[in-house]
Image 1 (cartoon, rainbow, N blue to C red):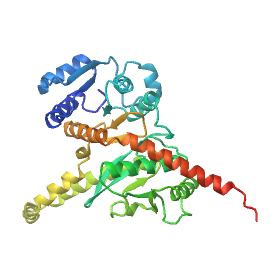
Image 2: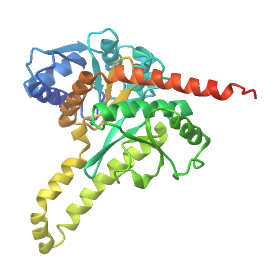
Image 3: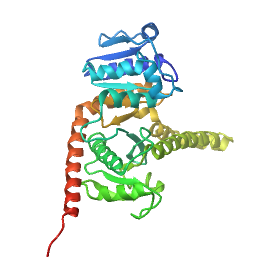
Image 4: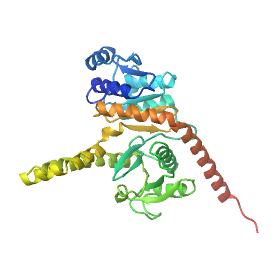
Length: 341
């Protein structure tokens, strides 16, 4: 209910997903029932796997998440997350207020054992490659251990969903040397070195699209700026190309010759092809979508969520977080043990 285009595009995407994904046993549409059913009629969604759950309130995009959730106990975001908490559903997908989804999920579902804070993991394309960026906006202020946990969660996701056998993990920084960056990054660097991760050290902005790293780790403030800059640049490049290729007849003929390549580029740079970004590290599966998402994005968000459920990503994250915690504790204990000659 909280997306930019209302529930109609969400329901259209659900219809397409149900047509393509026969393993889906149920989809619960949470929102104002009258509006939801009207949209279902409009797109002719009559699948018996669809259930409607009425929510009388909506958390708006401009509302402060925690305050809004306290005031609106019957809002669609809260009710959707509660379906996962109660075991009725296995995952929640929302294009609504991102802060509201993060807050409701963290409060209701609670983090996995050993995880301090969840993180948004966004898959970003480059030439013949994809990398995972996290955190993309869930936590603006972080501690070093949070970044280590993000690195582990991102590595699990890259391995299980993107198929990278030994994902290369890097800390986003202003230089590659271990003494560069803030105290937060310097300490996180040393902690990451002590884990079993394939940690390649610090990476810079120009490394992201050069196939040098598979998992890029940063706090939510930096990650959100990087994500939105990438999205804006992708849109800008396509707009510039359209303009430059239409300024005179000669260029328009050239555009016809390369139109196949341009279409492939547009498909690869289309954020709706990836559906959304999972909120990793919780006792439940949460997929966060852009507020401007349309039907194609919802269809793909459902596809990626089903794939995430199949691979049991949360189970693997919990196991590897626990293993890393034990390893770091052993290193600390070893460093603190006095040596007598």
